[in-house]
Length: 143
Image 1 (cartoon, one colour):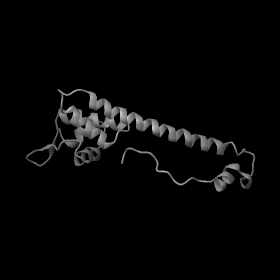
Image 2 (cartoon, helix red, strand yellow):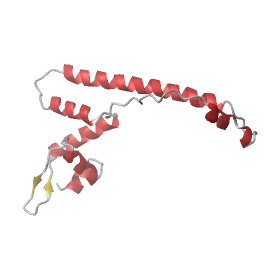
Image 3 (cartoon, helix red, strand yellow):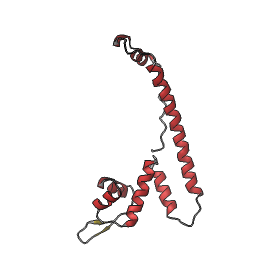
Image 4 (cartoon, one colour):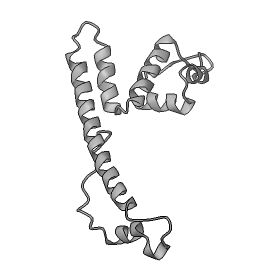
């Protein structure tokens, strides 16, 4: 199948296919005599695997590791579990950051009543007066 057909079957764009090829996540396709990329069922399976990992917010590094481990069918699942355990820890950290963000937003929201004039808006005053901590690095494992 050609690149457009692969993209259609895998429910993504042609640009996504090319990007994953460039990143080394999807193996390069063979070329036809007319220099068209030719993909097979293994490409479809691998592209779906990559897309499902991305849907779980996995980084390219994590996906690359999982693909490498998947290419060793006789090995144990310990390394796969380790990748997932680490990813779950990243998700837990991000959840904590979001909980803190929600608390800050909720606190500000409670400072304003709809019937107030804008110049008395507690949210705007709170934003102007809010002491910000030194900007801490937002947690992300995506690199």
